Image (cartoon, rainbow, N blue to C red; front, top):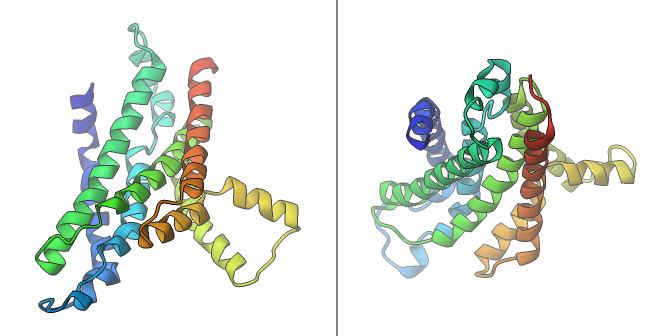
Length: 238
């Protein structure tokens, strides 16, 4: 199954590679230090790449999980797949974990290959992959739930949510107060935990791990993933 999935995911992995290249071109940290680094003060800070690596991991999860459950149901693959004695939870759980591993691989390649391409050496920053892991779990859990609930369009909804989260948080940052306070708080709670991810990023930049923010973001993703698992377990699929 793993080999078959990797073969089917090859076109999506190419899209993830293209996305990583775009992140590389748009990452200012890679281009701040042109030419040789002569002093310690001139050395770039690779931990500053954690934010871009996390966004890449999250979007790679969205790309790989597109139609995760909904396509199987819509095209009739769901019943065909499980005519054999295969546990749906194990099958889709394995696929989800493979997508997580590939997303983390994309983030790691971005961190390492990007540094060699930009600076000619690897300067570290591997701890930034913790932020990528948290972001991938958060968005991967949300997309799994959307794919279990929606018959189609789960990927577009996830992308809209991804970008809407940034606009929403920026609006709140600049003093906008749409809706009444309870509604604003409910929207902020349902949207991906970008504020918690930012707190984890800030902590890594200081050399510490914000356990509270990290746990909240992981819990957000695992809660949606558990909801998807319950739907797979108990819902009657067409």
